[in-house]
Length: 289
Figure (cartoon, one colour):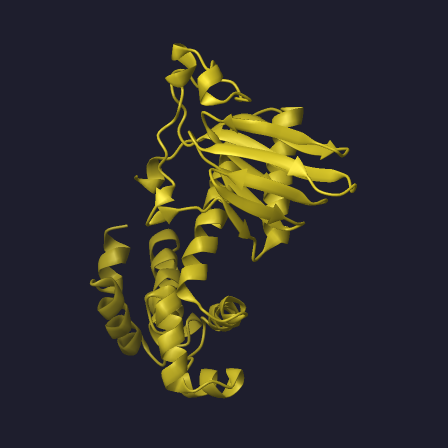
């Protein structure tokens, strides 16, 4: 699956508030469904696996999977959700939301099942997980629903953009979750990365990071590289050079001034660092912009 080719089709997007008791009998859907539980308590069965859903939990239903849902207790259920195709298809507008089991479908409906591209690495989203950043996911999902329901001018672009954002959130949840094995590690490493981002215009050293974040240099390098595929210093140099490249290509700022703005002692040090990271000299990028 080529991620840059994804163009979602949003079938249904609703912020559902449901009084209990409430049940969805076993069914198979033709598309994907993302359900975020904001309020209430659910029992969700996917194939033979049973999950207990509480506020902050995410359920992700896939084409052709048997699943059923029922409320637990008396608390009102609030569950914003979205049905979507990963890519718009010629029959996307014709296909509806399924509440049928496979034996209740006619031959035409049995041909509506979308190919599941999100059940194997590297693009795997599980049926159930607890969101690390539930607030962000909730905000993006509710923004998508609002656009889809009110349909202001050019809403199609906004809902597609929001759906892509949601997919990135879901995939990153699994990616980062697989890279770390201790609670709080993602937040810790994100804090270090934010610090580096904010100090792009000056030198940053391992000694400085080690002292500020109370972690050994060896352990810091290991954790950071596991998460971001480069060491902290490589990351710092990379974002400096990206900033430099943008200034070179999209402004007339002299190279010496760009070097100074990014905290380099002189143009020669800057040029060597730039060529090491980018493979070409700053002057080459300026001439060929």
